[in-house]
Image (cartoon, rainbow, N blue to C red):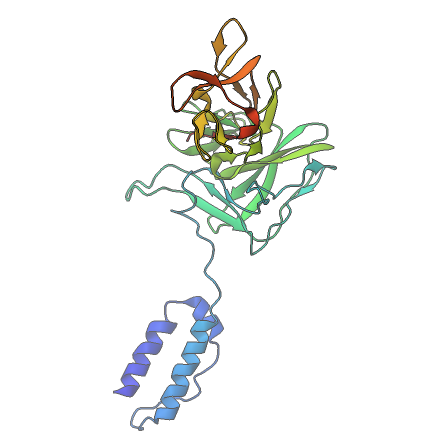
Length: 334
């Protein structure tokens, strides 16, 4: 009975897993033979051998499909600053070669490349790639903006690549066949890479950009940006800029203020968004001017900013700038 159970267990554990066989090379401490009574010590020694084999199995490979971040087609995770911003590229690109930084087992760099859905299960056909070692882009084009990407293999391996052509993100339409131009159709969640005559599907994710002999930009994780709070509302007529680094103009940007000292009926912690605040230049009132570009946003107030309705009385009033703080949030929107 014991011999039969041990033999079945060995077959169950050793037959399907090549990795297990590699880690359990050799023979069991005791070979049990038919017609021989099994000794409990010998049986337990064999069980201990199996247990050690299982405990020493290598970790599973990175997920290669059907998972990843909730937003698809994105840099999913990686090293961050204390403010929660991406920290996997240096601030400058001093040469024609650029490497990531701070990537490790404790802070792996992960991406998700989307490819529509499985025709049978309907599950997302995404490839998830990850690396715990720094990547390097070599042979970048001088005096140009280089868009840094990785291709994702089915094994989850990332291969670095670069182009001087900005990727195209469009809701739908025919992908460009221009050689080296990446087009991503948002509605179908699928990317295409032109080769000069056609544009086959490709698992590519753009991680950032670098102006050689200039600056480098790491794209925001999961298509979202939060600037963090800045104390005291900005002065009238002063432009405020922030770098959201989404790699494309966001669908949504928002200006938020929060009360830090009770003011005009508002308690500490009360928040207002930009639509609740209006400036007045003496002739008319207007909301704040928020503009956006591929990697940045700007904000401008009028001559007499921060007019709101008093929370207690409903009367129009002006906030005390020092009693509030502000921040910006931006979202790719898909």
